[in-house]
Image (cartoon, rainbow, N blue to C red; front, side):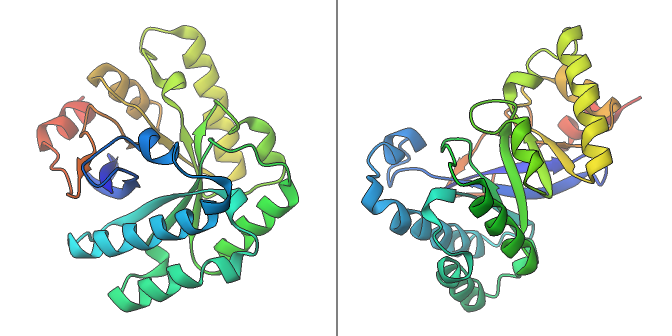
Length: 234
């Protein structure tokens, strides 16, 4: 696993760390995921959850932990979460500090099943985020059946937003919608100070991206406090 922080500019700290799949020698997520066959999907999803919690605990993480999960690997939420609950209890990880991200890599054919997963996870104390919102399979139509805690806005919406009026208009509507639905926003792929400042000034205060820190393999990356203060400076 590698870990990348999600900063919270409102509080001046780290909101969560996302656990990102890597090979044993740091190979990319794609190189690992491309080897997962349909018959291995459930076991792989379980192994990733367990390893992420174990490693977060070993590294002394004190923030929330955000873990991607594959909806099509979950046949029954409470049965499939047992290994996660077991490892969380073993290492003393609070369930309230777990966020499960619905990845956009999979096309979910059974929307009612996905809604059931999200509702069950909420009941068990987890937060749920819709990852890569605005691209792939993570589109607006999912919000007709899902009530996630957070929307993670894809880099395609963030890129050069300080200069792009079209993206600015889209983001304005997304902010209004999220506020109406009571959903938090996280901007993914923030790579420049200009992007970070525009988002912060529009009230999007949770950011993730290379501007703050790149993912660190088997480690928690440091964030330069000057990066945060540069964004929030008047």
